[in-house]
Image 1: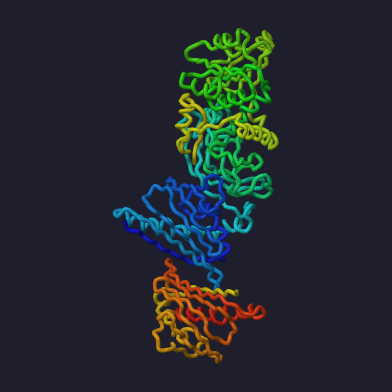
Image 2: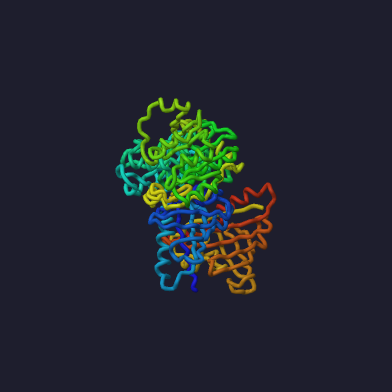
Length: 491
Length: 145
């Protein structure tokens, strides 16, 4: 196998220290290389940790992973290899080095690459690396430095608002209200963060039923042309003035209004973010934050479930249902789960349900009354709505609480309040937003969830993963009840 | 240990610049400060270990030994054996790197040496300015027309 060696160099008209301040960040290339659209360091590692992996997308859509092999501040150079790429750039190693030109305060940038192409691809790949990777990189870096886009970040790494430039990202917008097909990807300009704001490089986006409601128009949170999504995790890419709770490079997540999470990058209020514990991956965080916080306030704040009580959890194999079940079991609560199919009942049992009933084959009211010797349950958690609401009421014990937190099957309709006097029932219709609408509430709720994850009261399962552009498929699967557990989109 | 560094971009192809500076006996041809030079014992100037014996225009005599020469890297290294400058353990390196997108040449000249602390800063500055920058400046001027 022939090894191809490419050596290119250029003179950059900027002091070597300024250029090195940009290049030594192994995760800065999306800010200057014209071919790179979004990049993140895996596992939340520092970008100057030798061995870290940058995971990035090219604007043509392909996905590449590269590992930092060496980094030298003394020589102002670094080297890396490709771990995964769509092109057959086999055994690809490359290095970049800067040298000062003292006669006029500019610098020489050398970029070398070496790889083993298949013989028939040699000419094409040699040209691709020379021109589209290296020469385009030289031009992009020169442009970015001249435009001053990078200067502010170099000088003040944590504050980039004034001189910061917009950057390109991909987001999924709804063209109109409707089915999954109205979710359409588009390239968007992601503006630099203003006061109190950060720009996030999103590495995982959570998919929730509220996104479906927004897409259908049942909630008017997102006008046509807007971007849905309430939940994502990622890395702080830049921060505007006055941001105190997070810093550039922090791993963070959010699960809150305003919508707009279905995107590769996003500029948003910093005080909506929570920092992730080291033990929690961004994928798991994006999968569990909204559902876990929901389960937390439903159990502890709304229903105030106590040890020894018996509860009924609808969709016990679903996102929130599974967490509710697991968490309640850890508190010493008896849990009856309801699921739509036998496959899902296995999931519900694994989550810890003491008993599982099916909506498809049996009247679950009878099952519940039999299981509780005719007494009924203390609490029902119902996000199904129209199809189950009436029977949920029938399952309640005297002074029971019905927590209606969703309406997957449709609106529950009008009820006379007198109905609830029959057994002194309490009905709650909590709204997620009212439990998470201040930074303090968000910290309380997320802290409780992180504690539960640490203690094992809540166990995170691997989410089902879809590429961001496949958001329509993810929605169709969620609405078609073909999924158990959580769904995430990867930009 | 004191360090000196100087570099410049020469407006000519690396092969053209290298053909001039690779000759260890050519200081009088391309620097403004050397009056005459010879290689001791009549050795070829690209034999590793050869010694150039040259006289500066201000009269000082210097003997330097070639330690490394690479046509592949377009670089050479040398040490000072004798000089009026009062430096010890003086080791210098000269290197060319092609600038591929303009067909120019990056030239870099570095040295490390020991000297008494009270003279170190002055020596660094005079070597940087009067030897390295002056030499590189002359190379630039040679092609800049």
